[in-house]
Length: 346
Ligand code: IMP
Ligand code: ZN
Image (tube, rainbow, N blue to C red; front, side, top):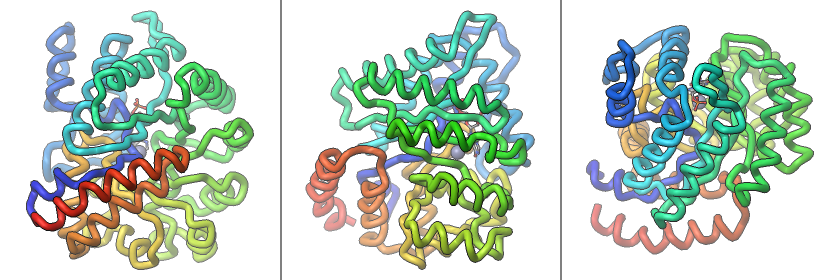
């Protein structure tokens, strides 16, 4: 399997934060039009670099300083969709935290409307990619803000004809206690929104088991510390396994922010060996200088996957998307059409 194989492989991306996915090219264009001292190269980790969670989240604050108006939000969203489409991602669920910026007049409402407009404009171009959106709750926020985000998601799901499919929980895993958001997540579920929660990115067994039992999320982001040897518990593993809650696994992200010591130690192996639903994702392709193509390639190299296994990994991800059976079937057909060509050539 060469680089071409991984690029041509049809892929699903289910864990990509819009602002963390910004490419150097987009960042350079945005910075060029501003009176800012930010150097685009300093707003990401270069290959081989690592950083503490504190450093990672400082970067996000700086990126938000640049993407502080609707025009920039539009451009990032539009460019990120095109970049994933170029990598043969056929279905993507982007996620983003509605943000207001009084200095530019951007409100959480105009933020969401701008992201949806960019998604809609891409759809009009007939790119070969289906784009859905999750609205994110940041762990730093209050329950009231989380409730507002759920309301926004409900309102704009209707207005966008179903582009918004769910709610994400993210933000610095060392900040706050996610238990406080349980009423908001229950409200989201009441309205039929799906939940993809960053859980156990760092050891937090009590928070993790409480959220699992109270909410039963539809997918887990990272799940780095679910297993006992990583600071989780047997009960947590049993819960996740018995409910078959899919895991969104972002290898490079975890290595760079040092929540996993090395690719060989990544929990992908633990869950993959259990035949648990595992989805390869990028998290923040811009910040972590990676791509979905590279993440598949790294997974294959590290865990000695054959081309058939890589194809199956990508194909099985379709089962975990937050869309209806018709969309899943459409994607499965697409994968089957592309399969023969891809595997015969490799
Ligand atoms: P945005 O929501 O589109 O602005 O994307 C950036 C945001 O995503 C950050 O401010 C974090 O809240 C969240 N995020 C990105 N990567 C991670 C991660 O690895 N763990 C937790 N949250 C993250
Ligand atoms: Zn994430």
